[in-house]
Length: 547
Image: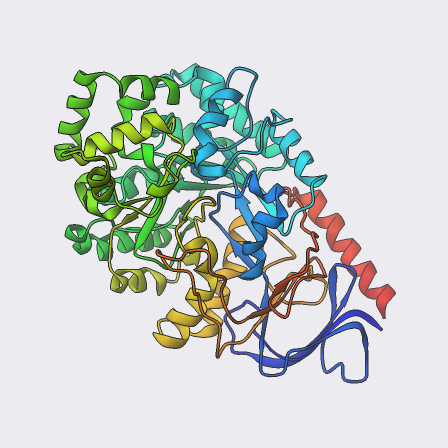
């Protein structure tokens, strides 16, 4: 008798192959049998007749680093089939920190990663150990954030690092990798990462490449200068030997649509050269990030307190207003997309809660201000910059062009709080329902590959991302005829339809579309060759024992 037996499902194993009808037998946290298991029984049985059985989805870009510790809040991820997430994104996360840098990061990240109070950790090891002892809905892997190691070496200084400082950062990345991280990340529009040059990026990436880690990067520009921004990170991969993964690929601003094909061609050319390059994408024509990122890089020198103080100075406000109208030397979303397309999604205070879901143009009208920039600056001051936003930047035709690229995989870039981007609740169901079933943009098997084995390869997971005997039982069962997202920008907290059952490490986390409260998630540490070989031996032994 199996612990769990899934019967008669249309199995999409994650390779991209068409489905085949199979039963799946699970013992403990592993898949132990696949095929015709009609002569067997399970302590718990799931009838998957007419349903698709796939590997659990792996989200390659999330901001659940803190709220994964709040299962009742974080449950929406597993409810859309996500069983593993990759934390530490954009070079700005929760470890490593020091006594001096931790308060700065807590302030800077509260609008992005949420607030759970003081953190009881400093190092990557301590953070991952904390997660190991904390009930989590799904599995977690971690990237060493560039910004965190930079502040440990040189604070939030807005200058180029010296060779000695670059070496210190590289050593800190190597330390994080040794403590379990799977790669390094940077967000080159966010302070202090924005102050780095290519030489610094090459050096930190050498630290990750030493352990076959990946470099997951929000490039320096995703609109007017995207082609140069891609050239930069591709050359970083070329010179460091790191595996390159571009976060949330897009070309922002409708005036830049002609750059989509050229941008994808650069990634293809890099692969042809022999560089390991991939990218992820969320299935929406709008993005979401911290509102303070609309400001030019020099405004962030010294961190959030200094930035807020500058916004109180009339001469600074006048200078920023002018730059918002004409400076395309940084990721200027006001210039590329317009105030009318920037919507506030979350604020920290009850005082301004009524502004969530309003564009900056609307907020200016509510406040009786003639210039939307003044409304933006005032709000940043009032909320101490703890604000998230949505930016509407493109059209669906360009989403499909990138989605169909063989190097693409799915990532939500989901941010919790307030009136969030609907991708938090809808990403995976939207791909399966809207883009696969309704638009025919992908086959179902290819979509599942982009959510499972593709991301598993990026993170170098050897026993997840596919449905195979001996693999961990991270599994999602969904109805291909009804699966769909229901979250919208107006009503973003609506749960998806059609995700029937989800298993994490062999335990049922979602049953008949309802969260069970089971928290079976684990920390997935980087594994060296000896650890992998030990695991393979254990799998082989378990197979013998089961037979």
